[in-house]
Length: 350
Image 1 (cartoon, rainbow, N blue to C red):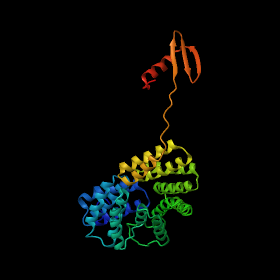
Image 2 (image 1 turned 135 degrees about the horizontal axis):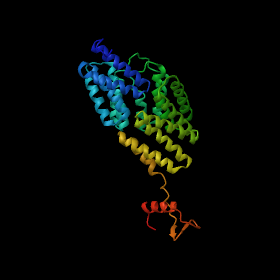
Image 3 (image 1 turned 45 degrees about the vertical axis):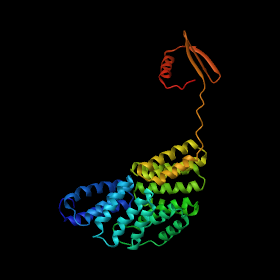
C-alpha cells in the first residue's frame, strides 16, 4: 500500500480509514502513528480532498493532546480545504471544530459549528448535548443525549465508527458526565455499565479509561468515596499516559470531589490544582476557572506548628529535647551527620 503499488487516491483513502478506525477505538496512540505517516506521505502524493482529510486527523489529535488554539487552527483550515470536495460528510470537520471550541470555552463558536453540521444532516452528538450542559441547561442536555442513544443514526460513512457499540461509546461517556452533573444515579450507573461492557469487547486503553471514569462518577453519587477516588485516578493515569491532558484533568476533578467528600481537604486540593493546571496548559480556560472555584471554596491549609527542639553537643554527650522529652546520649558519629544536615537545611526563625 505504501510502496507505490496502488494509486495515490487509494493510498490516501486507505490511510484515512485506518486512522478513523483507531479514533473509533479510542486509541490515540495508534491514530498518532498513522497520522504522522499520512502527514509524511501526503507531502508529494496527496491531492484534492486528501489534504483536508489529513488536516482533520491532525485536528482530532490536537484536540486530544492540545493546545486548543492549534487544534482550532487546524480544524478551520481543514474546513476550508474540504468545503469544495464534500457534501454531507462536510459535517465531519465541522463537528470536530465544534468539539474543540467547546473545550476552549467558546460556546457561541461551538454552537455555530454544530448547527451547520446538523443542517447538512450530520449528527453533532454528543457535542450538542455537552454544549447544553456547559450553557447551564442540564435537563435539555440529558433529554437530547437520551434520544441520541435510543435512536442511533445508522450511517455507513467511514468517518464514523463502524460498530454500533463503538458509536455508542462517546455518547455514553457524555451521558455519564451529564447524569453526574444532575445527580442522576440511575442513568449514571446505566451508562457506566454499558461503557464497561463495551470496553471489555475491545482492547483499548482509552475505552477502559472512559469506563473507569464513568464508574467513578457513579460511585461518587453512591457516596462510595474510596472507590470513586481509585477509579478516577486510574482513569487519570491512563489518559496521562495516552497524552490526553484534558481527559486526565476531568478524571482528577472527580478524584478531588471524592477526596473532598471524605473530608481530605489537602488531597482534594492537590487533585484539583493538578486538574486546573492541566486545563490551563491545554487551553480549556472555562474548565480551569470551574476548578479554581472549587479551590477557592476550600478551607485554608492549617499553618505548620513549629515545636522548639534541642540537638546540642556538650563535650562527649549529645543533649536532645523535643516535645517535652529529654535525653542525654553519647555523641556518636551519626549525630554529627544529623547536625550537619540540620545546619544545611532551611530552618525558619525561632
